Length: 529
Image (cartoon, rainbow, N blue to C red; front, side, top):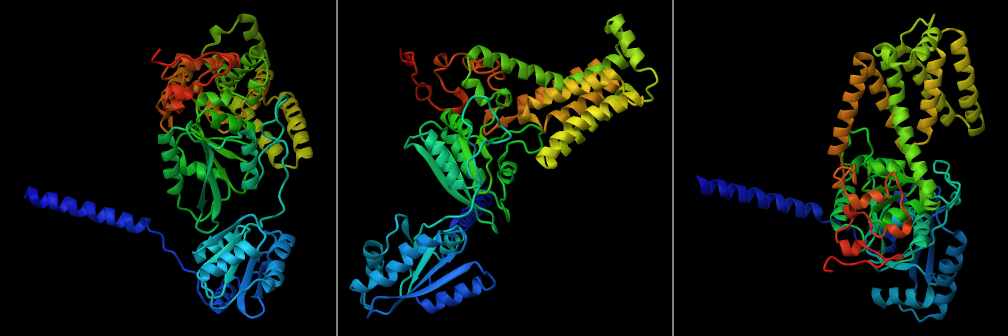
């Protein structure tokens, strides 16, 4: 009986491996040898596409070898196509000895070496790959009698220039930001990291959109386990369209049901370059200026690129203020409700008289009043973001002032609640990285504070802390270096030490301590010493 079970298990294992092997094999569609078949196929595929351009050319005087030049208008540089492809194929091929009896390898070599004048030139043997290259902006040359096409890089399209991103403005530091063009973004990173070990691995995602995605890392710094995990998760994405990097983020994050982000994003090349140099992996997506970085830790939410360009004392002060702002924007409204509802004796007597006088005549409870003002602020902020920029700023600022004053005069809200809401709103603006997390925590805190007071706030805080301790980002604990505690990593948390004291990269992101250590102005001793 046991032999039968083992045989059955071996059979199922062998069947599973065979299915995986078959699944892993890619079906290659060969390019038709007949130029007429290619022409009919292209006309069928791009029947109603007015931007598809197909030019037929005959090579030489006596060879009569037909060639098709195909590209998409608007994605290619038309002038370069005419000067570097069409013109040489028509004129220079006449001066080249071409015989129709030449084999396909000789024709390809003659075109590459003697006729075409393009720096980016490669061979394509798969018809579907040639179509994908054409739809990505390349020009494809199909040759009669051969099963090989030539791909010529002539990409050019209208795109937004490199400008300062609105979401991550700085007083000191680079003002350039990523654009919607993948090649421009890789160039911006290459300018920051002039190292041959900076690698870009291209992957195509989206069954319908065929979006170009690049995995970026520094070979020798990035942890191989993290890199393998990134490759595996990205390649497993099966979806019709990838229109923004947010699509990829939802598929590769460790805790999709958590409100805390385990995948970072940025619009600034200097931030992404700094994270790559720490051993992280970046994911660039064509069509969006937001670049993903993994692993992403909680401490990154209170860090800014400008912290490393300013003096360490001032940077440390700013980080402490950001930590204080995080505490205020999440707990302050709930703390106010808990004190007014359950713990009036904790409030100083004179302040209690002021609060009681301001709440005289208010028809709502402290919880309802605070929640209503908080939701009003969120509505104003959303209106300011969605409306045109000049109008949006006026709506958010003037609307807040007018509504706040009107609410007090109408007896709908008290002055203390307006102050609490204003301070909460200002604090939330300091932490844009947690913009989608803070409102949810604030509401949860408000509800628990209205039920059991300060005990509810404490219990909610403990539950959130436990949840944060259980989170991981690509195998790295989310609360590193606090949990687990790493003493050497605390030098770049709420307090930033001078750069010449930060001589090690984050230990949890790299594999070898000696590979992580790099020299700045100090001598590093190895473990053997």
